[in-house]
Length: 228
Image (cartoon, rainbow, N blue to C red; front, side, top):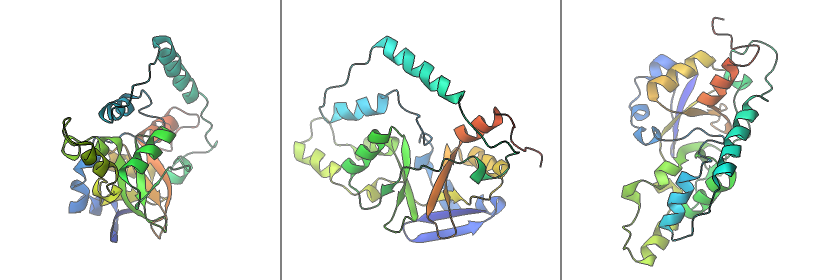
């Protein structure tokens, strides 16, 4: 079962076929450049860009250190431990430790959360933990959101103090924990999204399923139950 949540709450609940005909889903064009939740984007390019815009010095990363980081990241993929039974539902492979951003956060606070946990995007939730949107580094760095380089410092301060609700993508599609993995994969292909928030019946975020989660399950023994 799929849903679409925005700042006014749930605006759709239905099947994959019905989801394709919902206008708000196709309008989430700003989500197309988002990176999957997880450790993607750790090369630091987005962080360096934003730091440069703020006038902060860029950290120096040695080439051998970057090489070791890539090898370490690859090694981590070899250590994935999956339940030893056929996987067919989202809750069998979704990431449960999800980083979320409160909807009353400022742009600066949201950026600090993304940077602290090394994620490229995160669901935005209200005080009840209900999904209201999705925010990415790409959203924060969109040219139309940024002042010009010669702008007064007060303009930059105003940007950093701006509400995250002005930057996030909303409404945003999400999925129930018991949804068939194949149907989620179909929606990811149709929308070109890197992943979907997983919510309960009340819209509270309980996880996130990404393309990386599905690919990791494909190469793990036992594989996904693709034909069940």
